[in-house]
Length: 278
Image (cartoon, rainbow, N blue to C red; front, side, top):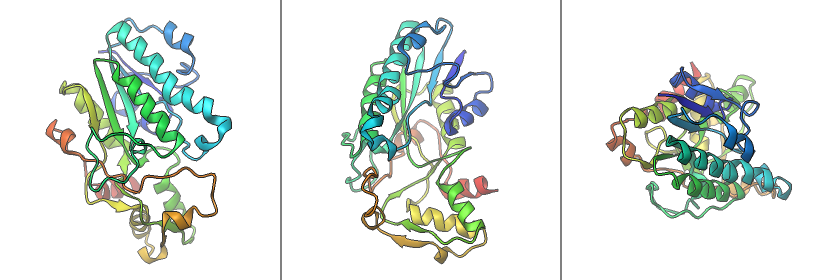
């Protein structure tokens, strides 16, 4: 089986390279997926699986009208180009989605078929990209949240603040679960290896959901600081002086019943966090 990783230099892309060591890893310098001609002319004939980890993920910067074309190019147009290429060669497309396609007002974990109602430009482009991916018969649309991997992320930021003696203020009314890229990549491999039914799968780490402040407190405790060194605030208060920021869904919890029924049991996020910090 020939596997191609697109967006191979991102946090998930690096984890996918470890999970699929024989895959062809393509960063933007090797394949710019926003370039229709470049995607069309790539040698797809012998490709069996395309793992699309390329995306615009700067949520707040996406709100700047000057960036709209670039955001849509990465999150919508590029997915359409890849979908056409995959349909032509008969490969399987694995596309990564986000809980930002939801408004976060659902009470309880979001099932895979919950109607999209994005609050932000980023969320709208991810929902539009999902629609492009769904045109491929052989596709896995993997929806995830709060990604943590090899690169800049919330957990690394909190660990750095803890180590430097800083006591941050973190929102405590956005609820979800972190997703560590090691587990996300393993779940994707499981879907492919077991030939699970095509379609959409929620895939995050498991465990009792928590807030961003809960995650920060867990990081501080792991670094030898007190959880009380993390002050808590509401999303409304935190972003009151940040009018350029994107609206966030308050409920980012995804229902994991389908991925578990497919035989993959994600680790508890607190266990994964301790492992990551080691």
